[in-house]
Length: 518
Image 1 (cartoon, helix red, strand yellow):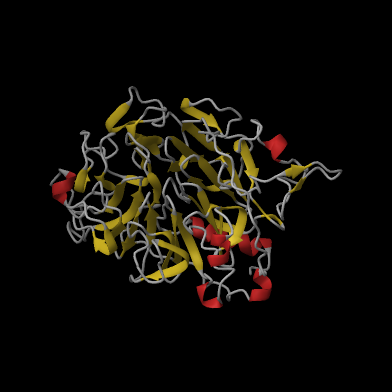
Image 2 (cartoon, one colour):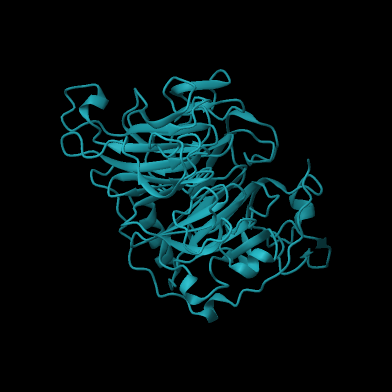
């Protein structure tokens, strides 16, 4: 453990400058710096492109007029932007409070997420969001039906002189004693229209360095290299072990991944996480990759320890030194030495190998340029949407750049593949592609994100403009300063693995199944 707040903040700052890309199903945690111009393309049925006209935009177009954007995240039908001043803006669908402005009214132009400041990372799930502050605390808002907001709800509440008591071991939602009856504006419906802190059974979740939001679950990395998870556990995506899995489909407060299992299954030294539809990934400082949760399409990258298509504890993925990860609905991407690899669901060509055959183990996405151009091309970023994928390439071949004067190739070029019927591939068409397509006209891209049917990117040439594909794809890509070499982790060695005494034991409990509206 880091012994002082100053040391923790120093580590958090170092992570924020690492040249790496980490993504999750609907918009993983993003740490980036510098102003960008926002572009977007794809589905715009809920205004998730930020002001673009029409229901679809099959090629990149200028998005919101925001100035000073540092990072972006894309949910199923909404988009987030992290601003240089540490605040967050949001636009798109808002039926589940995912814009965080205190209403449930969808917006085609950005609104300010209420009450957030000093934010350093954002993550967008299907219809919920996370924000990480400079102090290492996590806030959540949006849909909490499956416990993905991490505040102890759904649960039964009983009034008391202290403010509230929540059934089982769950604490009150905040220090003022506000319980679910006050926090959720619609009685009996787990929706937060404004951010609230994520809490463990001992108090607020603290000392967090990375976050990820999936279909209906959330992940966080703490400064001791451990991973914490909350939300839906219906397919083992929380990695809390067999007992927790059979104890109920929902864990509405953070629990340690592997904390209820043998010591060998406990993750440590983790620096980044990604959350898919119902599977999870963790990346260690040494480049080791771990996966758990649903594996019906092979999205875990390994059949070892998998029973009935589910793995309830982390397992290793046999790859070399991994630099970045991204998780789609049921497929996974990894960046290894400038090459893009993919595995899992390939029903819409989202693995980019020219077929629609699922892959149980990683394959090379050969259509993404590598080794071409003067100085050699390298993929420096990846993003995984619901059924589509994106890759950011530096030093792309001159033939791709379209200019013979580009002796070193062009920087910040995006390739897209997979589901394209909503225009989210940015190629100008409305059809799928099982091979990567170059999105023409885009160079100098530094950050990208993929939602369920739209895509978003930041252009380094245009100081603050967003670029969106039509449909949000689940995932976010970050490549600060476009490094010439493949991104590597430069974090200090992680502290020793916590002993069982420091981890718990974690107390198991039964969680009532929430009542869902039809």
